[in-house]
Amino acid sequence: HTVNEIRDLKGEVSGTLRVGAIPTIGPFVLPEVLQRFSQKYPNVELHVTEDVTARILGLLEQGALDVALLSVVPDRPGIHTELAGTEELLAIVNSAHPLARAEKLQWSQLENERFLVLGEEHCLAEQTAWFCRKNRVSGRTMLEGAQLATIAALVESGLGISLVPKLMSDGRYGECRFVPIGAPSPSRPLYIAWSVLRYRSQAGREFSRIALQVIDELLARNPANTVESTV
Image 1 (cartoon, rainbow, N blue to C red):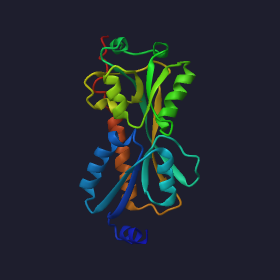
Image 2: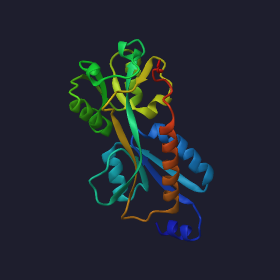
Image 3: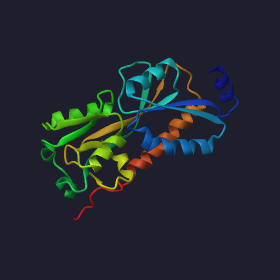
Protein backbone atom coordinates (compact mmCIF):
# COMPACT_ATOMS: atom_id res chain seq x y z
CA HIS A 1 0.00 0.00 0.00
CA THR A 2 3.04 2.31 -0.12
CA VAL A 3 1.90 3.78 -3.44
CA ASN A 4 -1.53 4.60 -1.98
CA GLU A 5 0.13 6.21 1.06
CA ILE A 6 2.25 8.45 -1.20
CA ARG A 7 -0.83 9.45 -3.20
CA ASP A 8 -2.72 10.23 0.00
CA LEU A 9 0.16 12.45 1.21
CA LYS A 10 -0.19 14.39 -2.03
CA GLY A 11 -3.90 14.78 -1.38
CA GLU A 12 -4.91 12.61 -4.32
CA VAL A 13 -7.87 10.25 -4.08
CA SER A 14 -6.72 7.67 -6.60
CA GLY A 15 -5.21 4.20 -6.84
CA THR A 16 -7.15 0.94 -6.47
CA LEU A 17 -10.01 0.29 -4.05
CA ARG A 18 -11.19 -3.27 -3.44
CA VAL A 19 -14.74 -3.42 -2.13
CA GLY A 20 -16.61 -6.43 -0.75
CA ALA A 21 -20.29 -6.99 0.02
CA ILE A 22 -22.54 -9.84 1.03
CA PRO A 23 -25.22 -10.85 -1.54
CA THR A 24 -28.13 -9.65 0.61
CA ILE A 25 -26.74 -6.10 0.73
CA GLY A 26 -24.75 -5.71 -2.51
CA PRO A 27 -27.58 -5.50 -5.08
CA PHE A 28 -29.52 -2.92 -3.08
CA VAL A 29 -26.71 -0.62 -1.91
CA LEU A 30 -23.67 -0.97 -4.18
CA PRO A 31 -25.09 0.47 -7.44
CA GLU A 32 -25.84 3.86 -5.88
CA VAL A 33 -22.66 3.96 -3.76
CA LEU A 34 -20.36 2.98 -6.63
CA GLN A 35 -22.03 5.42 -9.03
CA ARG A 36 -21.59 8.36 -6.66
CA PHE A 37 -18.07 7.34 -5.74
CA SER A 38 -16.99 6.94 -9.39
CA GLN A 39 -18.48 10.30 -10.35
CA LYS A 40 -16.58 12.05 -7.57
CA TYR A 41 -13.34 10.05 -7.81
CA PRO A 42 -12.94 8.90 -11.43
CA ASN A 43 -9.21 8.20 -10.90
CA VAL A 44 -9.89 5.36 -8.44
CA GLU A 45 -9.95 1.90 -9.99
CA LEU A 46 -12.69 -0.14 -8.32
CA HIS A 47 -12.71 -3.93 -7.85
CA VAL A 48 -15.87 -5.43 -6.35
CA THR A 49 -16.30 -8.88 -4.76
CA GLU A 50 -19.67 -10.29 -3.67
CA ASP A 51 -19.51 -13.30 -1.36
CA VAL A 52 -20.82 -14.70 1.92
CA THR A 53 -19.73 -13.21 5.24
CA ALA A 54 -17.03 -15.72 6.20
CA ARG A 55 -15.17 -15.34 2.92
CA ILE A 56 -15.51 -11.54 2.87
CA LEU A 57 -13.99 -11.42 6.37
CA GLY A 58 -11.13 -13.66 5.27
CA LEU A 59 -10.38 -11.36 2.33
CA LEU A 60 -10.41 -8.31 4.62
CA GLU A 61 -7.95 -10.00 6.98
CA GLN A 62 -5.67 -10.99 4.10
CA GLY A 63 -5.66 -7.45 2.73
CA ALA A 64 -7.38 -8.61 -0.47
CA LEU A 65 -10.26 -6.22 0.32
CA ASP A 66 -10.06 -2.66 1.65
CA VAL A 67 -13.64 -2.16 2.79
CA ALA A 68 -16.81 -4.27 2.94
CA LEU A 69 -20.55 -4.11 3.63
CA LEU A 70 -21.71 -6.71 6.19
CA SER A 71 -24.56 -7.51 8.58
CA VAL A 72 -22.69 -9.11 11.50
CA VAL A 73 -20.00 -7.93 13.89
CA PRO A 74 -17.21 -10.46 13.43
CA ASP A 75 -15.44 -12.05 16.37
CA ARG A 76 -12.14 -11.01 14.81
CA PRO A 77 -10.08 -8.35 16.62
CA GLY A 78 -8.42 -7.09 13.43
CA ILE A 79 -11.73 -6.07 11.80
CA HIS A 80 -13.41 -2.79 12.71
CA THR A 81 -17.13 -2.32 12.01
CA GLU A 82 -19.11 0.90 11.88
CA LEU A 83 -22.89 0.72 12.13
CA ALA A 84 -24.42 2.26 8.99
CA GLY A 85 -28.05 1.65 9.92
CA THR A 86 -30.68 -0.84 11.04
CA GLU A 87 -32.83 -2.36 8.33
CA GLU A 88 -36.28 -3.83 8.88
CA LEU A 89 -37.01 -7.31 7.55
CA LEU A 90 -40.35 -7.66 5.76
CA ALA A 91 -42.44 -10.69 4.89
CA ILE A 92 -42.54 -11.29 1.13
CA VAL A 93 -45.73 -13.06 0.07
CA ASN A 94 -47.56 -13.74 -3.16
CA SER A 95 -50.13 -11.01 -3.88
CA ALA A 96 -52.89 -13.66 -4.01
CA HIS A 97 -51.94 -15.05 -0.57
CA PRO A 98 -54.38 -14.17 2.27
CA LEU A 99 -51.46 -12.60 4.19
CA ALA A 100 -50.96 -10.07 1.36
CA ARG A 101 -54.10 -8.19 2.43
CA ALA A 102 -52.73 -7.40 5.89
CA GLU A 103 -51.39 -3.98 6.76
CA LYS A 104 -49.13 -5.63 9.33
CA LEU A 105 -48.61 -9.29 10.20
CA GLN A 106 -48.31 -10.96 13.58
CA TRP A 107 -45.78 -13.74 14.10
CA SER A 108 -48.56 -16.22 14.84
CA GLN A 109 -49.88 -15.74 11.28
CA LEU A 110 -46.61 -17.15 9.90
CA GLU A 111 -46.99 -20.45 11.75
CA ASN A 112 -47.03 -23.46 9.39
CA GLU A 113 -46.26 -21.36 6.31
CA ARG A 114 -43.80 -22.80 3.81
CA PHE A 115 -40.55 -20.82 4.21
CA LEU A 116 -38.07 -20.08 1.45
CA VAL A 117 -34.72 -19.18 2.99
CA LEU A 118 -31.12 -18.67 1.98
CA GLY A 119 -28.54 -21.38 2.68
CA GLU A 120 -27.01 -21.43 6.16
CA GLU A 121 -23.75 -19.79 5.02
CA HIS A 122 -25.76 -16.57 4.50
CA CYS A 123 -26.13 -14.54 7.69
CA LEU A 124 -29.71 -13.60 6.72
CA ALA A 125 -30.67 -17.30 7.05
CA GLU A 126 -29.31 -17.35 10.59
CA GLN A 127 -31.06 -14.06 11.43
CA THR A 128 -34.38 -15.36 10.04
CA ALA A 129 -34.08 -18.63 11.97
CA TRP A 130 -33.34 -16.71 15.19
CA PHE A 131 -36.45 -14.52 14.84
CA CYS A 132 -38.62 -17.54 14.06
CA ARG A 133 -37.33 -19.46 17.09
CA LYS A 134 -37.73 -16.44 19.36
CA ASN A 135 -41.34 -15.97 18.24
CA ARG A 136 -42.17 -19.69 18.24
CA VAL A 137 -42.79 -19.90 14.52
CA SER A 138 -42.06 -23.37 13.17
CA GLY A 139 -42.53 -22.94 9.45
CA ARG A 140 -41.57 -25.68 7.01
CA THR A 141 -38.43 -24.84 5.06
CA MET A 142 -38.87 -25.69 1.40
CA LEU A 143 -35.82 -24.06 -0.17
CA GLU A 144 -32.33 -23.13 0.94
CA GLY A 145 -31.26 -20.85 -1.87
CA ALA A 146 -28.23 -18.81 -2.83
CA GLN A 147 -29.96 -15.67 -4.12
CA LEU A 148 -32.83 -13.47 -3.00
CA ALA A 149 -33.91 -13.23 -6.65
CA THR A 150 -34.63 -16.99 -6.60
CA ILE A 151 -36.69 -16.62 -3.44
CA ALA A 152 -38.70 -13.77 -5.02
CA ALA A 153 -39.33 -15.86 -8.15
CA LEU A 154 -40.66 -18.77 -6.07
CA VAL A 155 -42.84 -16.42 -3.99
CA GLU A 156 -44.22 -15.04 -7.28
CA SER A 157 -45.06 -18.63 -8.23
CA GLY A 158 -46.99 -19.07 -4.97
CA LEU A 159 -44.61 -21.64 -3.53
CA GLY A 160 -43.94 -20.04 -0.15
CA ILE A 161 -43.07 -16.94 1.85
CA SER A 162 -39.86 -15.47 3.23
CA LEU A 163 -38.33 -12.71 5.33
CA VAL A 164 -36.28 -10.31 3.22
CA PRO A 165 -34.48 -6.97 3.66
CA LYS A 166 -36.60 -3.83 3.37
CA LEU A 167 -34.23 -2.47 0.71
CA MET A 168 -35.31 -5.32 -1.57
CA SER A 169 -38.83 -3.85 -1.66
CA ASP A 170 -37.61 -0.99 -3.87
CA GLY A 171 -37.47 -3.54 -6.71
CA ARG A 172 -40.38 -4.55 -8.89
CA TYR A 173 -41.71 -8.03 -8.23
CA GLY A 174 -45.12 -8.02 -9.90
CA GLU A 175 -46.81 -10.84 -8.01
CA CYS A 176 -45.20 -10.12 -4.62
CA ARG A 177 -46.16 -7.93 -1.70
CA PHE A 178 -43.87 -6.86 1.12
CA VAL A 179 -45.66 -6.73 4.48
CA PRO A 180 -44.22 -5.44 7.79
CA ILE A 181 -44.32 -7.70 10.85
CA GLY A 182 -45.56 -6.31 14.16
CA ALA A 183 -43.71 -6.25 17.45
CA PRO A 184 -41.18 -7.55 17.89
CA SER A 185 -40.40 -6.35 14.36
CA PRO A 186 -37.44 -8.21 12.83
CA SER A 187 -34.46 -6.18 11.68
CA ARG A 188 -30.78 -6.52 10.91
CA PRO A 189 -27.79 -4.19 11.30
CA LEU A 190 -25.83 -2.93 8.28
CA TYR A 191 -22.10 -2.39 8.84
CA ILE A 192 -19.14 -0.97 6.99
CA ALA A 193 -16.03 -2.98 7.86
CA TRP A 194 -12.30 -2.66 7.32
CA SER A 195 -9.07 -4.08 8.73
CA VAL A 196 -7.40 -2.07 11.51
CA LEU A 197 -4.14 -3.90 10.81
CA ARG A 198 -3.70 -2.44 7.32
CA TYR A 199 -3.31 1.02 5.87
CA ARG A 200 -6.68 2.68 5.31
CA SER A 201 -6.44 4.81 2.19
CA GLN A 202 -8.21 8.08 1.56
CA ALA A 203 -10.22 6.27 -1.13
CA GLY A 204 -11.38 3.76 1.50
CA ARG A 205 -12.40 6.54 3.87
CA GLU A 206 -14.32 8.33 1.12
CA PHE A 207 -16.09 5.12 0.09
CA SER A 208 -17.20 4.59 3.70
CA ARG A 209 -18.47 8.18 3.94
CA ILE A 210 -20.51 7.86 0.75
CA ALA A 211 -21.81 4.40 1.75
CA LEU A 212 -23.04 5.77 5.11
CA GLN A 213 -24.85 8.58 3.32
CA VAL A 214 -26.47 6.30 0.71
CA ILE A 215 -27.58 3.68 3.26
CA ASP A 216 -29.13 6.41 5.40
CA GLU A 217 -31.06 7.73 2.39
CA LEU A 218 -32.18 4.28 1.23
CA LEU A 219 -33.46 3.27 4.68
CA ALA A 220 -35.45 6.52 4.93
CA ARG A 221 -37.45 5.64 1.79
CA ASN A 222 -40.83 4.00 2.06
CA PRO A 223 -40.98 0.51 0.57
CA ALA A 224 -42.25 0.65 -3.00
CA ASN A 225 -44.87 -2.06 -2.93
CA THR A 226 -45.86 -2.89 0.60
CA VAL A 227 -49.54 -2.97 1.42
CA GLU A 228 -50.89 0.57 1.71
CA SER A 229 -52.34 1.52 5.05
CA THR A 230 -56.10 1.93 4.97
CA VAL A 231 -56.20 3.86 8.23
